[in-house]
Image 1 (cartoon, rainbow, N blue to C red):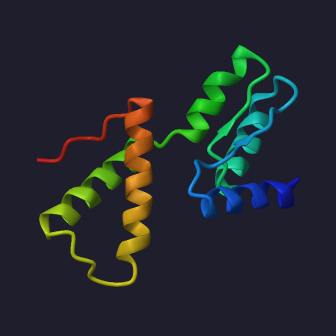
Image 2 (image 1 turned 135 degrees about the vertical axis):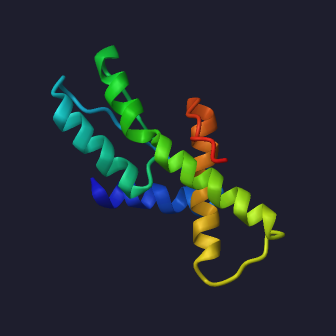
Length: 117
């Protein structure tokens, strides 16, 4: 299923659409569900269908950014804004895109970055 999933991800990006959602994992084995959810996220899928309410916590934990991810993203975006949104080198654009995505997901999931003083 890797090929059709990757085609869906590419088509979504080309069409400027949200990433596709992965199909469900049958069974209640949480380690298997976690592994399949991590694989789906690594491929660029943005969610996973559930067959059972017991799967929700594992899937949400896997697809949502961590507090450290949210903190990194907020720090990067704040620094980027403070320097006038100037692109310094070739790594800034990919990091900007990643930071914006993580920040958007963190807000959607209610994940608060650690405030820096």
